[in-house]
Image 1 (tube, rainbow, N blue to C red):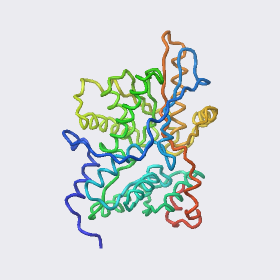
Image 2 (image 1 turned 135 degrees about the vertical axis):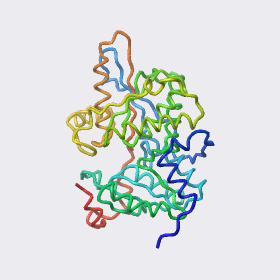
Image 3 (image 1 turned 180 degrees about the vertical axis):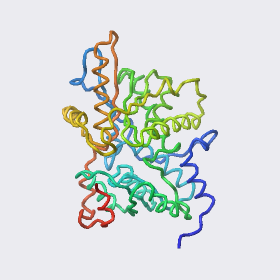
Image 4 (image 1 turned 135 degrees about the horizontal axis):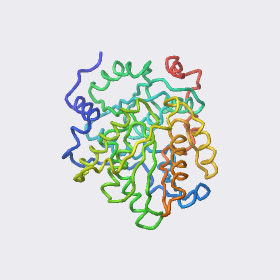
Length: 360
């Protein structure tokens, strides 16, 4: 029998489900240092076209154990969980989710138990490795046939004493503060002369927190840079709506008064690169993967290949502009090898059969 829910657990669930209601006037959240910053910026000279340059922000290098964009979010999420006296993290993601793996690795490192409701995703070798690594690192998998089944699996666990709900992708008003930090870090690099001020920052838009935090942070820093969120998840309308809601919540949380129309000026959303849907490779993404490899960047078909394709397309579109332009692609996939994490992981055949059924 599940323990009866307590007020703190209910509050945590509500706060993450509807962050905009809790962001205004909220106190600053503590941060647990997990990453190595600043992450480098690098010019991809072989992909410049005419008057437009392409740069990359290497958030694949946030941590040598497991990097990517989840590290910045988890620094605030885990601190908030600890402040609420939580002992368990409960989250949601596709089978093979980078978010679920990162939450498991860093949650366990900080002393939390981690439980994850998993939903189907197209099967690739990388997806299988990621879920194996998560199970081997201590994640308790709760297979769900789809998002409709997630509520049945997750809600009782979230409402139990000691639980802290980590929303999909870590994209709450708290987690998105990590990318307010990211925007401030970029502003410092621009002011130090490490790269030109970007006209456009191109980043994957899945659960919305990275795009939202960057938009709010760039607004707070007063840079001219706009954010282009490349939709990689479905339904597209909800993904776009949530990113905008989170961006407003972030700006309120950091105490910056919004200009009229700031979000329309700051954030653009592009849904043309999704292809057949979440987790499905595209021809444009495969070409982008080949181009990125020449610069030593590894892409995945779900998030970064589609995003890099959108970035290079924008470079081409701006190649004949009379004034120089700069596009910055924000690399969100961990470049740390998964292989060391597989040493203690079960084989694919040894995974729970209900987890294997989620590979589609």
